[in-house]
Length: 83
Image 1 (tube, rainbow, N blue to C red):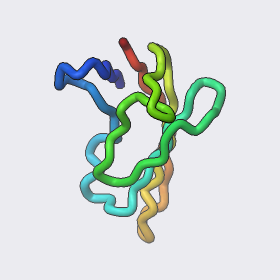
Image 2: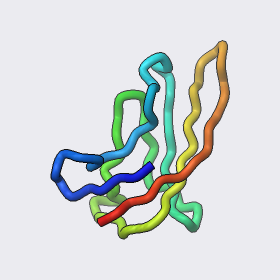
Image 3: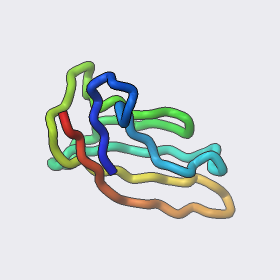
Image 4: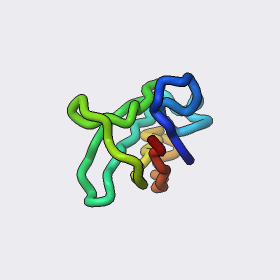
């Protein structure tokens, strides 16, 4: 996945796709050092900022937790910010 938060309306934010069937979903975004940058829930999107500051071009990692009583899987992956 790629995000390019430059306010052009294309890939300005990031969120897990196809998540509408998981109302309890939450996801966490980390930098390459393992620092947690964001904790978000179903319907939210990450804007590529940490404490109000734009983060640089680079790779970032995520954990997605479904938090569903019938399906408690977790997914780990990464995406890239291009500025």
